[in-house]
Length: 489
Image (cartoon, rainbow, N blue to C red; front, side):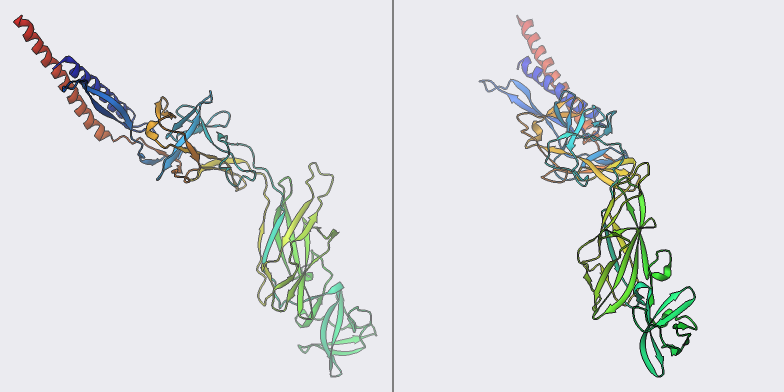
């Protein structure tokens, strides 16, 4: 027995103590992975071993416990699959980490809070609805500015228009069935203030003859003076069509109305109101006329301000025209300090959204467009998307965190700052969105704790200490044998 075996044992035990001590020291380090040491015996040409050597230090890449922190930028790699955050230092070198303690620096870059390295990921797409996964990785920047306003371009209308509503006559002429001299006929009338005038034609040019007329409810009217002027007004309940010259300020001249909030190119809100006017039936079809007003001013249909759009329905109650969106335009008044661009809105009535059945008006309106909004914060989704929130109640994707995986993660080289570096043994990284391509998902406002089992480490520390003491004893024994030999000489 020589001193070499004991010295190699002391050296190996010392390194084992170093590894265990490092694990204990990092038991509270976020994302830290514990290590174990692999020993190998040493032989030359003889049957007697020359001691022990350290073959490798093996890291345990199993997941640590997930703890909720509430930190806005904290994120944990969670669930099945591999995953490392991709970090870049100021020199452009790339490193990998499981430490999800993130923050935003003075340049609004997302950085690792423990080492200041930039977090790499994907930019948002052009519409800020998703991340451009597959694009070149780049440092993630958290924009702190306002969300851009978007003008309203489409409005969807879903409603039933009551088929039993009383139609309104064209050009202010209504119709009613009256009986005189035992004969029932359709008469036409116009209302001017408190005066109702009865006519025999729809153009309201030929006054009805003097006489007594009775409606379907038994009400009687007397026409006199040869002008068709009636002794009393005709109630709506007996009319076939009400006289109507549309006026948005007179609720008696339209059947229903519905307001919609729309936005101009500057993000200012405006109220657009649709006025629905029931029209008389023609053959097997009937319909409504729709008038559009913006902030009390007439909008244009087909380039004509104040013109209505006709909705035509089949006798089954389905919309037959228009089938394509109706373009309604409005030019904002000039002379303002910041005039907005003209507004053009596509009104969608088709696709079964608007019907005419014998039930009540029941509008449901959808519209795009939004005002500007102040940045209020960001959340991190399970797929790595960074979703920014704004004071206007809307959100948008501003980027995404990427993860990397390796064919042999045990081949990574540990570096200071709780990071690893790629080596030839680890292989090249494969990057992608969390939750895809064998990568783990993320959990926001949480951190992955160290996977060091402190109890096991303390037990292993005692064993390593005993091993060190035993190897020291072999050296002491060899010294005693050598001393005996010297004493014999």
